[in-house]
Length: 83
Image 1: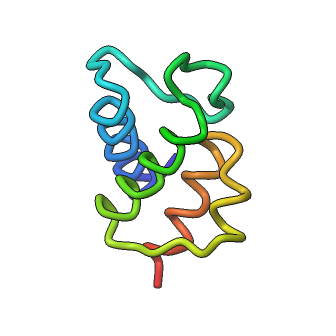
Image 2: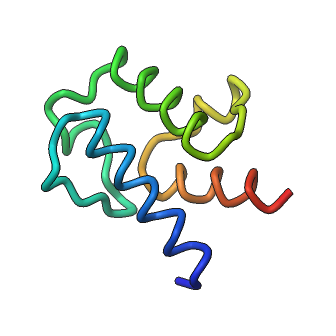
């Protein structure tokens, strides 16, 4: 993982901690909603909005639909922040 990817992961981890109110939460690439009890469909929307705000990006519906795990989130954020 390069420096830019590491920065994205740290920022994304902070978003997860703030969104789910858990300062000990550590994201990993295969993490899904199954891994966090509070991660339901409503919290997924809250999480996506928080990600968009943190990274200054706008995700379209197709992209949001593909955010099945943290790894996909990292890939999508990286794609948007390279522009």
